Amino acid sequence: MMMMVERDEVVMNQVQKAFDELDQLCLSIRGFSEDGIRSATYRAPVIDHFHPADYCQKGVAGLSRFYSHCQSERDYVEGVSLTRALIPLREADGQILKSEIPVTDFTTNTPNLSAVWDEFVNSPRPLLLISQMLEVEGHGQVKLDAIVDGGNEWIKVST
Image (cartoon, rainbow, N blue to C red; front, side, top):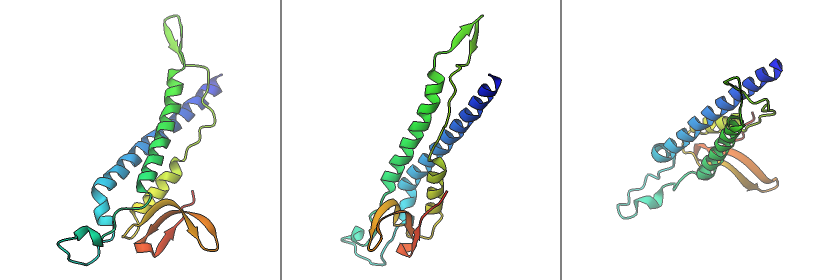
């Protein structure tokens, strides 16, 4: 019984760590979307006072989908945590006991999502794409984690 409680605490610590990391990741992506995207995208050296937006990159392909994926993963991890917290607790002699139902086999995409984001934001500008499927002639569909350096570098992160 003691071994199961220790294992449960280890897993719940992993759940909390994953949640904290995903929460910070979501904040970082939102901050990048609001403030950093202008400096990370392509701006053509064209002066056109009538149509200034026509000569610049409109955004980073896949950024909103990647953000949504990170939020979904964070919500999943939070759900694991809350499910464990909401399991009815037994009261014996005025003491509240932990549930005997252990959390087992906790899996998360947190390491991969964090690695993709770190690689993306630390890559040479302009940043073009994050976490997208592309049709590549002769290879079919290929999942790329990032296209950076104005298209000169294609990145696939392995975790």
